[in-house]
Length: 207
View 1 (cartoon, rainbow, N blue to C red):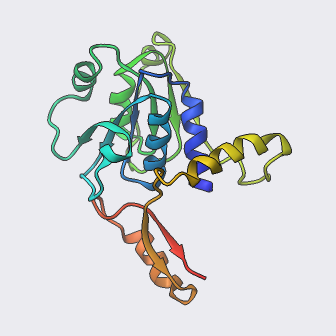
View 2: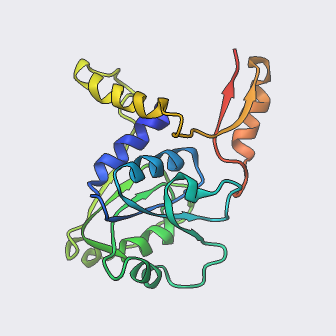
View 3: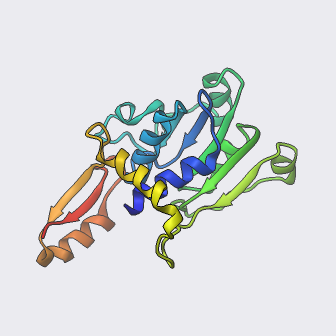
């Protein structure tokens, strides 16, 4: 439920509407795969960014366009203008940061929103004030809402809606591996040693 709630929240917080474009970075991650599936259910068009194409077909998860950054040599703003017919992207759901995020911000539509929920890049991203305030840009972090407090009763309706979607056979939550509890060292090592392009998904302990 943790990645599923995260995916639900960032899509809702993006305020993207049907027919608008959003950019999703680290698109082969388990969170991103859920984000894209939720976005497509709302009619939101997705541009997925990866460092290397994964084994999974990201189009099956809702990506309308997939950009392999290891192969792309077109400047990101130019690429976005071309893909969106000069409309720009209405939201950026980012788990990377670095120069990629800066380039995406410069490709954003007016009043776009940036939702940060990770920082995989070891590089900082640089923006000028004009990139933000002249474009009406909103930048906000996302921290999982139940890290410190359990769900309140008024959240039950939302949580049930999330469970209903997750229960739909058409909704896919990829699994990268299954482990017995006594294999915890192998499971932890696998989670840290995954490489770009490897099987996406969460490892599961089988009890």
